Structures are given as structure tokens and as C-alpha cells.
Length: 302
Ligand code: ZN
Image 1 (cartoon, rainbow, N blue to C red):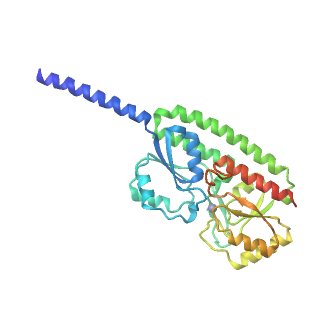
Image 2: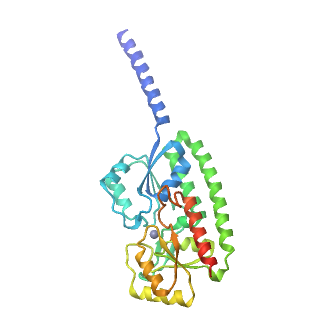
Image 3: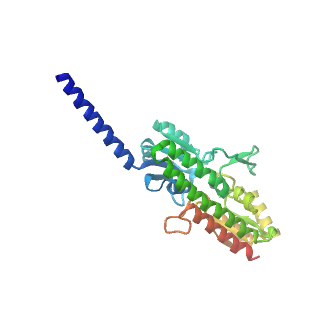
């Protein structure tokens, strides 16, 4: 009798515990760590209130040369899901993840895409270009990968993630069509731009703009004197008017390039990071809209 009473009590307690844990799980947001601000914004769009997102490299930050902190390692250790770009963009991230013993779900946003190899002026071998998000069609692949990762980390809210992802993908489809329409209104011969580093190759291929830059795929290198001289000559010869600084790169190089070539600074492009929340590129969609408006104004001047 004593044994039976004990058994019934244990079962009741276990049930109470189990129900309690379940209720907590339904209310607790999924903890997501994204390597940089653009991915964090995509996660927020798909996850809504169900997720709590941390970006390791925040607004206007440079993920190429980022030095992770102990707080970053703690955030990863406590996360249910981590999202990174891949293709060597945040080269410090795989080591950091391994060091934390993270066992949750890992999403590489570029999964399923093929990297565009870029032979830089400094490296002989082609290097995979990581800036795939600058083509909105690639960003849509990122969003599908993020939605899949969230559903794996939090299967109970799978349907919510699908609905939110579909709504966001519809907005991105409209954005892609808008960018195509905006740039196709500019004569092709005029669509030439100089920026700080090679971050816009995917944008250029998708939307028909030629980009050049004094430094390569990563901001961890310095401009060679001969690259600067070549660009100055090219800007003059082709009458390139659109020289842009970037939000996360040192603007001094571009200012020097502009003053030595006689070109004006066309404005600021947001390449590898969002602006702060009050700025013109607080989300991925606003980033693309801002960049395209700036480009169209500068290119239409010639
Ligand atoms: Zn970059």
C-alpha cells in the first residue's frame, strides 16, 4: 500500500513537472546567436517574438577582422541555434564555436549556394567570395536555411516560422524586382562604381553593375600602391563618378582615391553590416533600398 501510494505520488509529481517544463518551453524564446547584424535581422524576421537574437558583430562592425570576446563565447554556449555566413567570411567563428562545446543547431546561411570564386589582384588562387547576401535571390536562400534551422531547434513552432518566412520571402521577392527595375533604368555603360573593398560582386552580377575596389575580398589587407595608381587612372579614363565609402571600412583610402582622381564621393554604401537602428540601413531590406537609391542618384549624374 505504501509502495502504491508512493508510486501514484511520483507519477503525479512527474506529470506536474513534465507539464510545467512544457509550458515554460512554449514561452521561453529560442536563443539565437548570429555572427553579424544582417543575419540577425533575417533571424528576427523569421522568428519574431519566439526568438531572442544576439549579433556578435553589430551595426557598422567589420566581421572580417573581428576579435571575439569572452562574452561572445558565453552567448554561444547558452544558445539553442547559431547562424553564420560561411565561406570564410567570419573565419574566427568555427574556432570560437568549437571552444564553447556548443551542441545546438548550427546554420550556415550560404548552404545550397555555390560560391563565386574571385581572383583578387593580390592572390593567385581564386578565393570564394563570401558577400552572397548582396544578391537578394541569395538572401532568400539564407532565409530558407534560417527557417529550417529554427524549426529544427524549436519544432513546436514550426508552422509559425514557415508562415513568417513565407511573408518575409514575399517582401524579398518584391525587393529583388525593385532593384532590377531601378538599375535597368540607368544605361549600362554608366553602371560603374568604385568602393572600398570587393563586397559587391554578387550585387554587380545580379543587377548589372561593375564594381572595383582598391582592396580585395577581406578588409584585412592593405591597398597596394600599384592598385591605387591603376584605379586612379581607370576612374579618370572611364569618367567614373561614383566613388563610395562603406559603413564598415576605413574611409580614408576612398577619400584619397577621390581627391587624387578628381572624382567626388558619391555617398556611403552599407556592405557588410547594418546601420544602427536610427540609421538608413537598420534592416536588410532598408540596406538594399538605401544602397540602390544612392547608386541610382550618383550614376544618373553622368
Ligand atoms: Zn566584406
